[in-house]
Length: 159
Image (cartoon, rainbow, N blue to C red; front, side, top):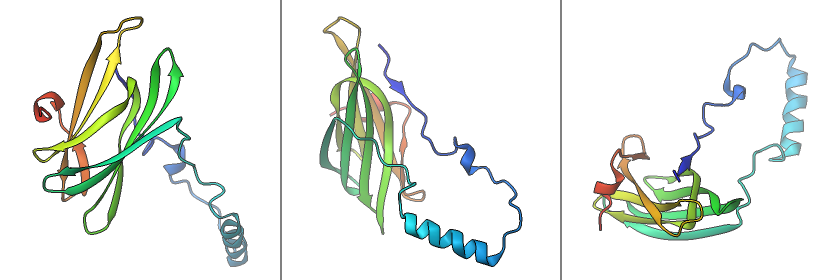
C-alpha cells in the first residue's frame, strides 16, 4: 500500500483564469454587489465534514507554538482520507494545509524537532497487520511565511 496524496486545489480551478467581461453599468455593479453582500458566504466552499478530528499543539524551534488539526474520514477498505492543517503566528495568524491524502490507521502524528515540523502516518497492505510508517518533514521558510516539505522526512524527523 502506498500513501496517496492529492494535489492542492490552488491553481487547478478554471475559475482562476481571467476572461474578458463585457462592459457593465454602475447600477448593475451596485445591484450585483448588494446581492453578493446579502448572500453572505452562502456560495463559499465549506471545509469537509470529517468523521474525526484530532487537534493538538507542538513547539517547532525557530517558529514557536504550532497548532494542528488532523481531520479524517473512512473511504472504505480500512483507508482514510485526511487533511492536516497547521496554524501559527508570525507577525499575523497563519494557516496552511500541509497534507491532503489517504493513509491507514489514523490519526497521523505531528511533532516538532530540530527546527522541523514532522508528520508520520501508516500504510498497510490489504489483509495484513504489518504496516509501514512514512514520515514527512517540513521546514519553515520565514520569507515565504510557509512550511515547505523536505525531500527526506525520515532523516529529518528521527527522535
